Length: 223
Image 1: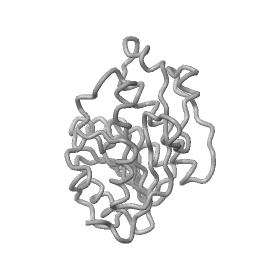
Image 2: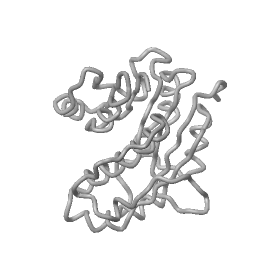
Image 3: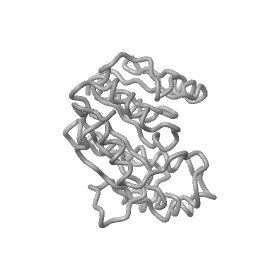
């Protein structure tokens, strides 16, 4: 995988996972608290965490072979600026893995609007945003499960959600980039309904709460 950037890495679990095959993985987040947590809990010679704005990074152009950013774009005031920056730091033949919740459908699953989401998109709008800077190679959808509603009072809702999301998307990434399947240990708190939840190829005939795109760097980005 070469050099990998995890943009908006949060608490760092996903970034640490990537070091199993990456030569070097860098996780960035604008939260000082999050990066402090990452540095305390994940220490490896090929892993680095840094406080940084994902819309204006300090990296040189074409620094990374792979960029991953899961559920970031909906939190940003300027999604186009973010995508332009991710394109800038990605090498010419690199790959971008990016996901976002689907507007309207996501709200129905998670008990109303998320106050931290500034710009949710429908699938068509999401792909249009990406197509301005990237060539979309694959598009996937994910459906969430009724268990998520029931777990809100019993478990930490956000942690359950994030763990499940990372589990599924890292498996997707691994199958595409590492070219072999691995048997994953399931997290102890995941119910059978969670374990049955899959990331599958996107189809307009199905309703998805989350979409994930795998993109290549376009030669002629739109201005």
